[in-house]
Image (cartoon, rainbow, N blue to C red; front, side, top):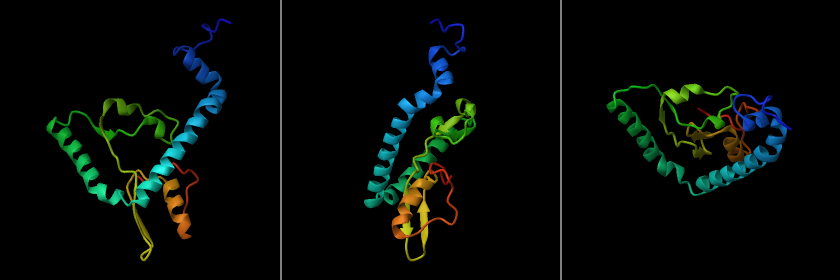
Length: 155
């Protein structure tokens, strides 16, 4: 079957993603998503178990500060944005602005402390609601308001 007349400008791959996205999502994206979530959950538990995030936090913040200082020394030619991958966003819109900005790598995605005495949680900005919920439930705690999407970050 000749599909060239029906294909959008992006070619065969875009045609498949547009017209067969349900099959593509089921066969490829869901299994990859499950594997990614398993990896991320195990990573989070290991880091929290060994309490390594608080030890690395200041160093990570300094690395971000150095990126901003480099941007300043370069003359601030572009606006800043995070280098967070587009596929991690919660929006269906493609953030095209990222192509025209200086990207700053933020590696701040860990729970730093859970203070049982004061009932507080200290987290980095890219911690998501799923991480927080998974860490609090064993203590019998929950957030006062829990968003329905586990992947939403604290920001």
